[in-house]
Length: 460
Image 1 (cartoon, rainbow, N blue to C red):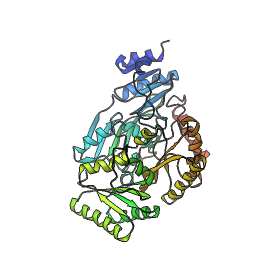
Image 2: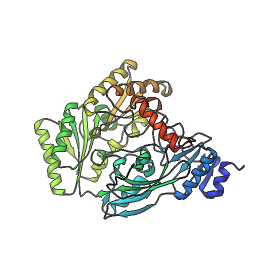
Image 3: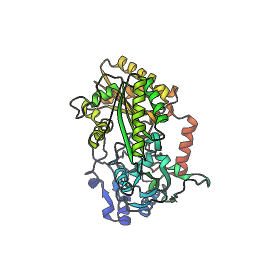
Image 4: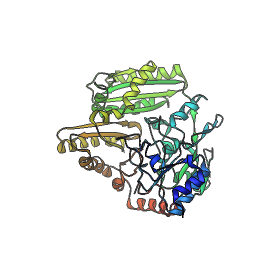
């Protein structure tokens, strides 16, 4: 009997299948230490029909398959083993339709997020999903991980932006539900079986996404505050005063702000160091003159009331790049220290201050010299945490994770706000999900992928 790689070459053609040796010339991921792919083969189909053929053959052979997007995942969702086949949708990278009337776009799963943003912007539209990895991550990967990002406060996460999708099940069955409808209450909404499930239930091949009108105004400011209570009050105040235009509310604890605005970092501080909290706030709207007046009036009133210490607005593209660079160039922390343990957690705003204080106290008790950086999407309850201790990464990671994750259970927080579970968070899943929930997940997995070939050993 022919081996699976030979069968795939015969069905798809040699150009679509890279052997173990050929695949080893390619990178295995964007983040972390450089490493090359170590797989049985890398398969690159051109359309849904070819994806179906690949999965049908692999299902019959009980051959494990790991879907690959832009490889910017940070929890090991795309990690492969030498006996597994990587299924990359990089050649399925076409934007099939931009519908200006219904404000939708239909794309293949391999389209890079930034390319999609640029294409719809040329048509006067906005796709509001926005994250630091937009230059490499793909729409299929965004859907598979239910990506959140920098504008989720206003527009929601990927789940809220998907109207319909097409996916291929483990046995090669194509499930096509490429609807453009805002409302479709006809039985189970099957697209949610594939959003956020990290390629374990099916491979997403096409997606219909919601678009918005491109903004005509953009007002952005850095703000310094004296207390966490002041930041929470400012968030409520900004929502009230900005007439529905508030899009971003990014919070930085002082340690992160100082790291990112002190040499050898390339960024200078927009506001002086010394405040315990800083916020990057942005509002997008359709009325440039009115929106700017509202934004400036909100800042002025907050200053007069003493809610904020200082603020500076961005008045040029250079300043926008400067302000946003401080938020988005998060890889600098790892470059500065050599390594960090990174987290993305979700919790109620009212619990954030005590949670961060508790973590700092525990880290200080364990390691008198440690570095801790907290920042993130305060408006939707998502914080990113980076921890560095002067010790070996492998021997300390488990201890650090226990300090960060364990307190979340008591406050009904989540160990993963937007990055998923993958390989690296499996042992902590039970802190955020009940045994009955986990069992139901396993039941769904068994029903849709009885041989367990799709992204095996991920999530649980």
